[in-house]
Image 1: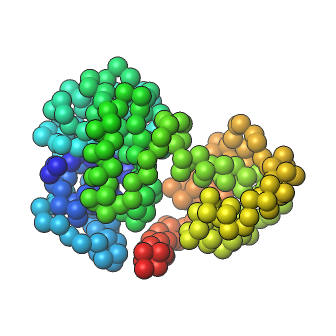
Image 2: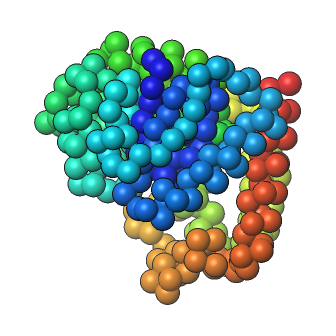
Image 3: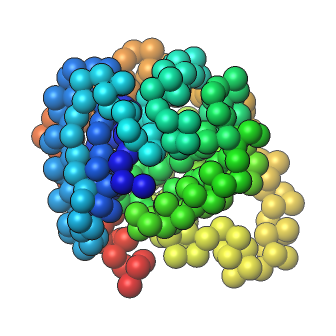
Amino acid sequence: MTKAAVIGLGTMGPGIAATLARAGIAVTAFDASADQREKAPLGFDLAGRVLESLGVAVTAGGSTCIADSLEDCVAGADLVIENVSEKLDVKRAVFTAITGFVADDAIIASDTSGIPITEIQAGMKNPGRIIGMHWSNPPHIIPMIEVIAGTETAKATVDWMTAFVRRIGHLPVIIKKDVPGFVENRVLYSVMRECVDLVEQGVIDPVDLDTCVSWGIGYKLSVVGPMALLDMAGLDIYRAVGSYLNKELCDRSDVAAYVTERVDRGRLGMKSGGGIFDYTPEQIAALRDERARKLVAVRKALEA
């Protein structure tokens, strides 16, 4: 596999493209937005510098370039990675277009955050080569990738993707059932639901909540995973605490007003200059740089 195409150059695309290029793959990228295409080279460069600071080896033959059309982007690609918006109809439209342009044996992967791969591949040409490849943000720093098979995905495709993820220096995690949200986001969103609920109820302020999670469970979980943590703490302790605490945890199936009311007012987070917290453009740039540096330092420590 020597040529890959990355579709979508928003949050994830530039980091994915830079990671593949550093692994010796010629990457062609495309976004329907001309503005995103114009910004992409800066994203490639920033991600490349982070990979350099991580000490990720450079494999000869890698490169990045930007195409002006989807057809030109995927022409001759052995692997296509889709990163468009999280809407099933949009993804299916893009996949339908891709399958009309690429070879029958090209692998087509979706970086969806949680739409079942079975729903994306249904009715597509050669669905056995369609697979989920869920990167974690930022994709050039977080080395875990979920590999998800839909009901029609061939085992050979899963095996190929698993080996490929290892080839680019990342850690493949095989998701055995194609459930919505897969595993990473199901765990993350269950944590987020409880956190939002605690803040909304006035149990804790947002800043203290972040400190509690980052320096409490987050610090431990970066070294000891949840299942290993159960053994470390003792299953008897988990049973005892869970017997009274589980029924107290938030189990709402909708999204809390604490979030929806802010969205309705246009407070979307860093992208709009304010969400739960307020941000100036200078603060946003500083936070992104600081968080990247800290993530790099944590990864180096965990790999040591």
